[in-house]
Length: 216
Ligand code: HEM
Image (tube, rainbow, N blue to C red; front, top):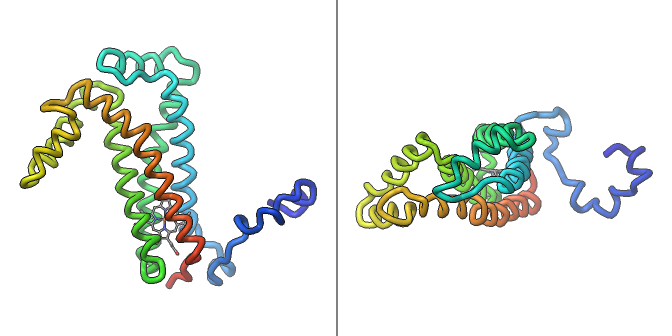
């Protein structure tokens, strides 16, 4: 926020603890856009949250109505196709931005002590983000979604001992049915967002405590 605006709002001083962070010297000398990718990933997550909330107003997570509710969003609901497209694009871009962020952190060796827990929380966020993608893919309830989930949920089935149980757990039965759809909807819109908030808090808390690494 520029000083002239802040003179009117007086926002900086009371919130200084959150706004003012120490940066590595090399960043103060020359801006490196690679350091923006954590923030870009977070911005995309917020966009997904907002567009996802809007989609949930019209989406119906049932075997009978899921597909037609998507068609309705796409063809009848005001700006439905746009909101759905933003949700899809943000999801894809979030994975890309997260991988660039992760590569930046790796190349700079910023995963090393004392930031190992920041890295661990980040790894959890990576798994959660991929789980968002996997569970969201089934929701349109079309042929592509259905068969992708048949294959995806069969994969853990090849694991010794626990495999069969895992497939049953994911599908909510022997086959991919309406039961699986409700299960994936619940995971996609309730469980994963809650776990994401916890892990984001952990990630940001560690960044605040340990600061941003100086790089190479
Ligand atoms: C939802 C996903 C994620 C979000 C929103 C996020 C956000 C952020 C932000 C805003 C920063 C501050 C510095 C920067 O932007 O480069 C950061 C730093 C960091 N992130 Fe992430 N991150 C995510 C995923 C990950 C992943 C997948 C990893 C690695 C497995 C990771 C590891 C780290 C580490 C080690 C730092 C400290 C870097 C340093 O000190 O230079 N993050 N993250």
